[in-house]
Length: 502
Length: 65
Figure 1 (cartoon, chains in turn cyan, purple):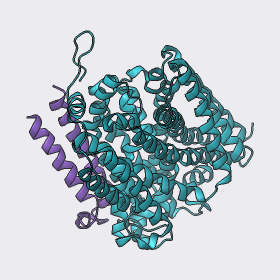
Figure 2: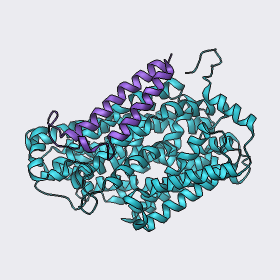
Figure 3: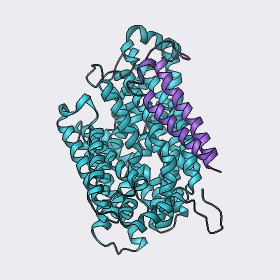
Figure 4: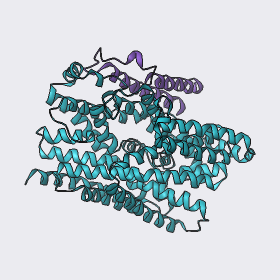
């Protein structure tokens, strides 16, 4: 058996276990939208922890994290900064959203906003932003999976086939099990990627340089500019403090606004589950540390890949590791890709029906039929993502930048919904449109950005100012509705057995 | 107690934001001393992440009751 055969055999085993876990997970789900989209609101701490961690850290973090440390040095630290800062508000907002979800039956964040602001167009616009943002992100995950397959098999499994195999498995378990399939495979994938990251991250510096300390001492002597923030930009020139700091801020504000992450509040069993997930989240975040070590190890490594994001597979493939370890690495990278891609596919499909379609037309479908439509939409999202992954090439990164800038714009309406009673639907809609427009404009004309600030952050400020101004200029919302909504969000509920769910 | 915990959490994460972005990061943006072999600024980020774990634990303990 040649090396690439061993690698493929290990990866096939990994995919098979994924499939079995994903299919098994859906057995106890009810035949309802809440069952398919929110797991019957029964996710415990274990699943929520891995959903939060594994979903947030995608192929972009697993391959891109080391890639950034390798090519841009300390610029990569911004990824370390924003994760915990981003999850902190969820400690309060997560339980508030979950209580409202249990009371009013929300399964998506846009449906929550539409009800709060008594306006379906809020759901249509927020849902459309979410779906448009999710598809290039799915494509990026697919591309990541395909690249890993191609690299570790010496091209015997080309990118299109590798992406199709990995996401074929994803679509099967998403179809069968919905969010329960996503949740339980995330547990398996999360354990896998974290174990791989720590093992390789601690082992490679010892094998190559005799330890972490000796590696950084050599780096300090040869490339000290790589070890202090803000590091380098994509062109190899010093990155600016403004760009670095605004990247931290926009990512921290935006990361939990991604619908596939936010809507997991509606899947949690109770308030305490969400809080425990937030408490434990920093332990997951620390897995970036070994990944960055691999990237820093790459700076001193004798050879370099064409693409910085391929530094981790490059070192793994050329440092004399056994084929089984290479196969396990490949499976770990696929886990990072699939654990985010499955949640995105499932989230985008759910939002397309529940928010966009239902916001435009009166949805008379039964629970069973809605569940079936979401399944077909998941397939459609997967196919569109696959086509983009194969045809887009480099422009995908630009598309993703726009996507992130767009998703961040959901933050003002979400926070305003919970914190400012005077917010009106007109203010939210105007804010969203202005925020997305400003962000898009600055992506096209980056030279217009002051102090090299992230375009999403500037769009966010424009969004917020517009939301406040238009809300104050329009008729105040119905006080009784807002009072009831706010009270529900702040009041721990009791179960049918009289047990407090917090 | 809940109010104190909530405000402490708010202050911690506000301080964390300032400490991990410019200009607050600048005084700690050095390679030396190495902490367990890791550049000081790298360890600075890890320190704040570990600190957040303790803050979250305290918040959960107080708000969970």
